[in-house]
Length: 250
Ligand code: TMP
Image 1: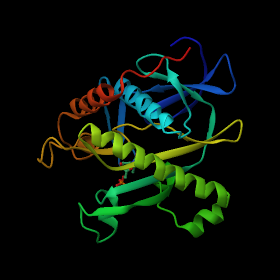
Image 2 (image 1 turned 90 degrees about the vertical axis):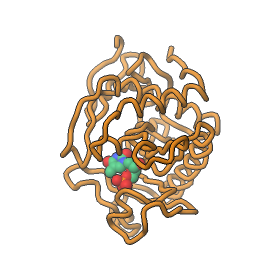
Image 3 (image 1 turned 30 degrees about the vertical axis):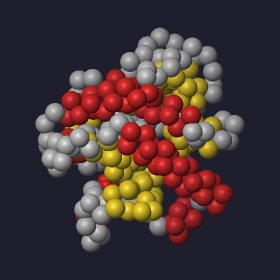
């Protein structure tokens, strides 16, 4: 990718670079690496960067059509996206529509229980601390968000859930749960940031009732199942079938 500036940040699945043309923009490269359990498990998957970049781009465009602000500007290539330069709020907002994953490890709630209204869990984003679940009182102590920002984050996350649940349902996918990150732009606007992909969502295929086959997300890798990229590819195919290709940036 030409035209990007220096590396600002490297995470487990993406790299973020400055833009040479504007301080308000960044370029994000989606990598092929996958990690789970706070990077205890690692692997490389051919084509993962492209699939996550293109799926995320389309989903950000879907959110945009529903008036939900995001950092996304457009795709620049298969694996690169242009986005607004935001300060990431170090919180992971998880919305759960169906109980599974850590919720069922940490509480007696039975796997498969429908959660309506959806459960919203907030985690403090810090790999060294293992991204702990935090309480409202701890969030207050951290002083990361004003009360208004906190309610804006929660409202936006619930709007994202409503919009994506409906979108995925149209393509026979159940949005079980997902993780969002938020950022503040240089103009102090709160936007959905990071990525929305099979790395950060649990998606179950409604076209099969087989409990393993229906998993079309990173749980395949977490659980040691095969056909991880075929699953991501299926999500990509359905998302682009319903939405068309994401726009190019400049
Ligand atoms: P959990 O059940 O492990 O708490 O995961 C809830 C959702 O959040 C699931 O869709 C996967 C996503 N997630 C991430 O995107 N990043 C993470 O680091 C973790 C732990 C979960």
